[in-house]
Image (cartoon, each protein chain N blue to C red):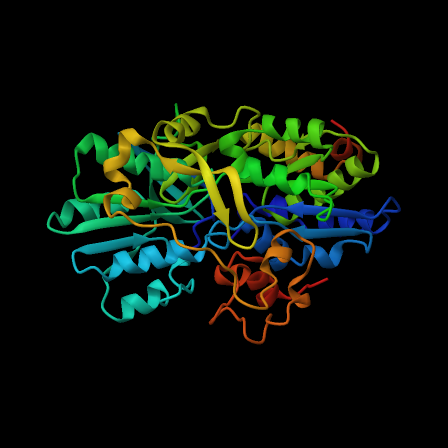
Amino acid sequence: MRMCLAVPGKVTEIKGKTAIVEIMGVLREASLELLEDVKVGDYVILHAGCAIEKLDEAEALKTIELFKELKDIYHE
Amino acid sequence: MNNYLDPYRDTGLLHLWAERLQKYQGKPLKLMEVCGTHTMAIARYGIRTLLPERIRLVSGPGCPVCVTPSYYINSAVALARRPETIVATFGDLMRIPGDEGSLLEAKSLGADIRVLYSPLDALKIARDNPERQVVLLSVGFETTTPIFALAIDKASQEGLNNFTVLSANKTMPEVLKVLAGDPTVGIDGYLYPGHVSAIIGTRFYEELAEKYGVPGVVAGFEPLDILTAVAALSEICNEGRHTVRNLYTRVVKPEGNPRAVQAMERVFEPADAVWRGIGRISGSGLAIREEYARYDAWKVFDLQIGEYSEPEGCRCGEILKGTKSPGDCPLFGTRCVPENPVGACMVSSEGTCAAHYKYGGIR
């Protein structure tokens, strides 16, 4: 296991402070203790057994649009 | 399988961005990434082969395992050899050579060493083995350290008395300052680590841009994330702007993750740290606070921090600063290979030399 690797996954279930996160079809347990207000259906970044940040879906789509735009990448 | 990462790997757009970058006519640039996952992704996706001659992308000290000095491994091996201890660790620490062998060799000689997926799993080992001492090896940057802090805090709340942590955690800001201020390194811009930034936020980078004149772009880990970040950073550098751009907004907020920072600061405090290949940097590491001293393996087992030296002929120091490439080292690929690493950059799969060895793309 590479310690630095952190991957996105979808929260499918929450039991207390622990979530079940689906990563490319694989289910993993993750502690939610470093985040607030995580809900089922949220995407989170999973690292070493912990969800370390939420993934913002609106921003994720915005970035995909940015890839198509030369000027927006160069200037905010 | 169609998945949510596909748009970040779009081949058509990758070609487009590579073409745009090839047309770069600005001043020659040296850009540095400081993240083991970036090192791996850049090598794996062949990002360097898509860049023009004028844009050089180098790997800095972004692999926490690689920059861990050998005396740490010596202490971990010494602890593992004690019959009453169980050493719990991430897998990438297993093969690092110490003066008296690696943890892998110690395990093959009978030491009880358990490889973990999460630091939190060490607590269960401690609960299940009340007659043994469980020592958790704690190495990592800001992405990982809050999870070690969580483990220590939970042990304290539970009152576990057979659990300690051997810490060598490090933080990014001071080493980034040292490298930014070193004229022999000559960095034009930083490609900032996405998941360290998810924790610490981006405000420190603004300070670095203003005070040291080194701009930066926060980047994710997919090929389009990296390529567009390099394009944006090249433009910012070429225009002489001292600014910071966050292109990983889907994960990184300016304020970072305050809850994770609080967890880290509750348990750890700043300390001097030795970076393998670079040396001692004031305030660049973390030590367990006095309130949690009963969980500090350095104190509980009265371990001494040893001398620090580099193997003869090894060029890791210069490679970690980006002043030399792996191919410039006489040991690379000869005496120093992933199965039998000599230097810091070969010891973890995320090290610069290990990534170059596996995927090529040296320039």
